[in-house]
Length: 277
Image 1 (cartoon, rainbow, N blue to C red):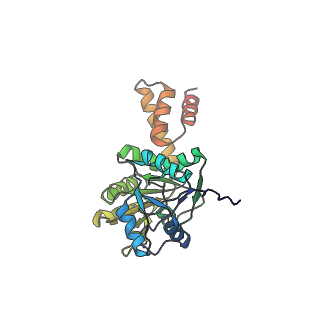
Image 2 (image 1 turned 135 degrees about the vertical axis):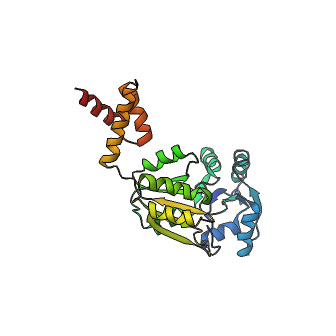
Image 3 (image 1 turned 90 degrees about the vertical axis):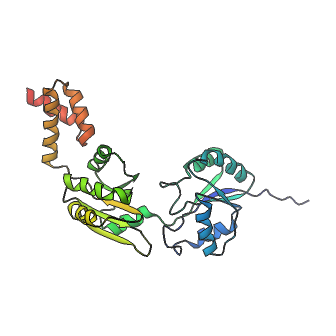
């Protein structure tokens, strides 16, 4: 008597091109051909990639507005033995793209999750920037509010990578140039596309360029680590002293300035109390 084993389903995370449709791996194409269903951010966008490579597949949308509901449906399909491929519009899913809820639900349900290597705007920009790659951090899109953006940039102790709107790029660069004009940067625009541009220079140089020539297209900003010189430390101490003179308690003043500057609150508190002795 022969028995037939039930098919084993799994989720496969498939990176897709960030611009040039040729930048897709053979493993990803094979998975997309074999998939019972492809969960994608925008079915029309993914259809263009599939048509380019002669692939016919069933698509279902998975985006920020339906991901939690759709994730449960897809997990059940995987449990039933189906192969589900996950793609985003460009690059690796979950990296500033949908997919996190689906992966988490798959792991919680004990179903297999396989991740394929492939294109990433983050890594492409980092390598192209010429800035140190030993320690780096990706923060997604930079905050819209100037104060929040300043805190994030000034506290970066490693190379920082961020997405930025071309409409806000000039203002962000001007803010960096005002505080640290010599800070090294790279603006990576339209990566892997026909009009790709990687412009490297100081904050002051790039701020001047994009003030006169506004950026277009998708932008990845790579920022060198912030400098923490004596001037910045001294300014932080002076700010704490001003708050204390205004009636704020020393520890509270140190905590406020620390949040704004990134200088350690305990360090500021110790130095201020020591000076009083």
